[in-house]
Image 1 (cartoon, rainbow, N blue to C red):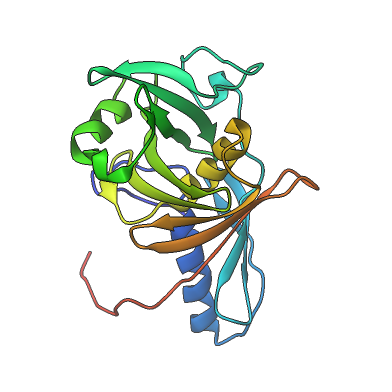
Image 2 (tube, one colour):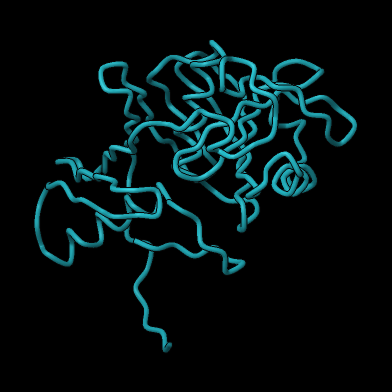
Length: 224
């Protein structure tokens, strides 16, 4: 699977895209629930089409080492960047960095405390995070409001695409960051503008499992 952003750049992976791909292939093959193996720029990913139409994806293990994400922010827990301070737009933001094969900056709070999404101007802040020099390959950025330890609400700014309705790899990164910060449980509902995903970071195998829908939006024909 290869993905292209609206600006023509090619990300390593797309969590929402891989769920849609599994659903699309299943309908083309006229087959019921089954598991697929999909080679992506982030490695081999395994989506599983469930009986209820949801798609559960084994997203693999998170990458937490700062130099592999990559970020030049100073690690705060071993080689991991958790709640590292970043001065931007006149405030100090507390940033945790996770890669799911692609880089993510997760922000639960700033110098004023925990975030309220109503206070976040994502169109102003998103580009400043994305292109900040501490992210050599740019970054996806997620502003997170905590509802409780099993439920969060998110605004998304994606590298190369801008403000989007959802980011599957980002939802995974959010739960990893939430666990590392002590703010979320290992299984958590992530409410994105486009709808909810359930993310589980299992201790048994250190893999992250993303479960969510994939629905037919339209059919069409184009010339290339």
